[in-house]
Length: 18
Image (cartoon, rainbow, N blue to C red; front, top):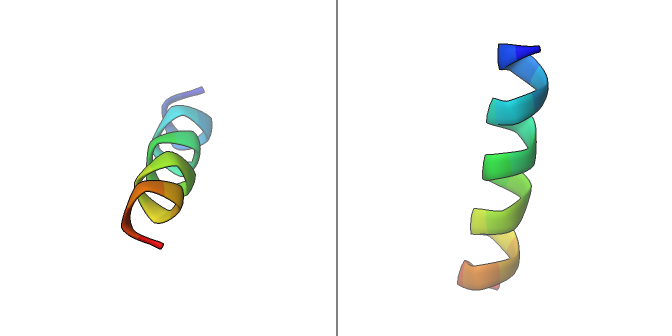
């Protein structure tokens, strides 16, 4: 569960940065 949340957070950060 924590891994999924971390992956989702990383994905969102990617969208914001790029």
